[in-house]
Amino acid sequence: MKKKQAIVTGASSGFGLMTVLELAQSDYHVIATMRNLEKSKLLENELTKLKLTQNVDIIKLDVTSTEDVNEFKHKLEDYNNIQVLVNNAGFAQGGFTEDVSIEKYRKQFETNVLGVIAVSQAVIPRMRKQRSGRIINLSSVSGLIGFPSLSAYVASKHALEGFSESLRLELKPFGIDVILIEPGSYATNIWNSSISEVKSLKNNSTYDVFMEKIQTRLKNEEKNLGNPIEVAKLITFAAKTAKPKLRYAVGKGVKLNHLVKRMLPWRMWEKIVLKLLYK
Image (cartoon, rainbow, N blue to C red; front, side, top):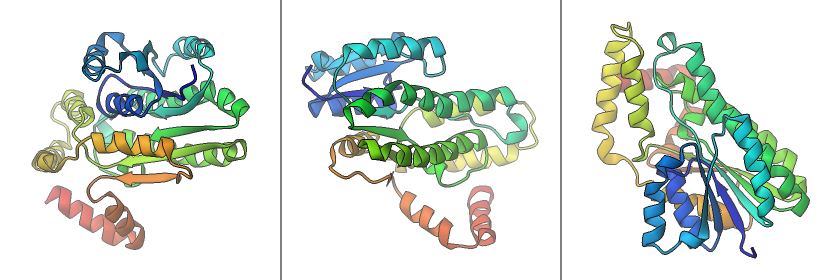
């Protein structure tokens, strides 16, 4: 294959699916991976509509499975020009800390952090030998700003931010760029899944009254959710631009909120957030 090749994890829906389509339309041959191949139908249908089927290979990959990652690494031997890895696979574990089991925290980190590291380790040797490549990690505004009822997710994205900074400094001498994409609130199913998870955690929780207020606020904000295609287009830009930055924040209010958080004393920031969420 002479085309540049790109890997996208978590490609069955949301940012991952749209990124596969954007990269395929930008003349990349895309290796689209997903944990459950039974969920590939939506992607397959979109590829057929756009006549891009030949541009995409769909492969099973559970990023938390050592067996899957090793098998995936073996399959990569069939490709000779892997220039982009998009670490998108992830989920949002909802719930107040007291109500979330340590097993659920482990699962959150196994997917959102250790899964990213495992797939990156599988791909880095190929990029290092060719002395070129991009590793694009899907972070979140939650990697920049804490949020009650999402401590597991927030902690995993903060960890991803630190890992990505370190990895960028390690790989830069080999011509490999590491990039963070930091979306705000977008119309994907990750938040619906998180809220559903919260409802199933614990009945009559001490935090029910706070959770209800947060959910009401999130419901009222649904009309302002961004279109996920914006993130997919930004990922494609980061894959192609000559000199990519470390961080790309995207979404309504993300840059402003992060700036305000950095500038304000914590006590003032805390007061504003608590008033917005719990009033």
